[in-house]
Image (cartoon, rainbow over all chains, first blue to last red; front, side, top):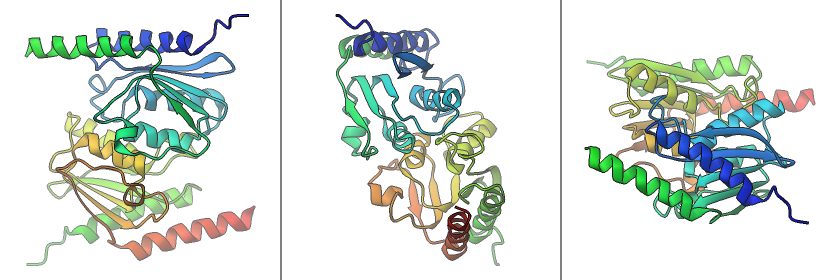
Length: 149
Length: 149
């Protein structure tokens, strides 16, 4: 039987969030957190609207998921995020002890792999899910931004 | 002339915040952000009360300072924090482009130096200011916690 709730399914939901960020003039990154095939948190980058460098999609999703679960730790949860987490977000994910991180596009400059951020030993991480769609949206955003200035 | 507004003065304010965290059963870490000798943000760890691993003193102080300044970047600001920032907080400070970080006690296990977190090239960092007072408060907290369990 084909499982409709695979990584592609949930990454598409994260991409919807990134699209919302894009429409609001935010760097288009979106995230959802899933437990038992249920989305318990969804968020998109809000650094411009909130004038706050800490308002990355992942940070908001971590806070929302913990609030939903009633506990600090995101055991058995998976984060889907359209762009590889940065040091800050990977550092927050370290504290959350999340089970699994799935990201779309790689951030060669400021991603947690390039930066050498330590994840929790319990956490598995993999990238490249719908990476092309994430990269295309990010590129479109930056090209349009450049043309405006 | 003696400057009353030196690093010790502001670290004492961060220690007051840590003391408040201690009294609320939180791991006692406090922070203030200062610009032109004026405290524009003060915060203490609230991870237990908010059930949120992202609620470190520094994260809240960064958000509050940006809100006060009306801009995302903490140029010309100094963060005083009683314990060396972790990966998450150092990652947030990277994005904030803060001028200077002054911390009290070193976190040998999970501090940003041990973890190898990258700070912004503009940011200067130094530690050891009122470190003994910070360590003493943290030790007292953990000894009491252990005796309760």
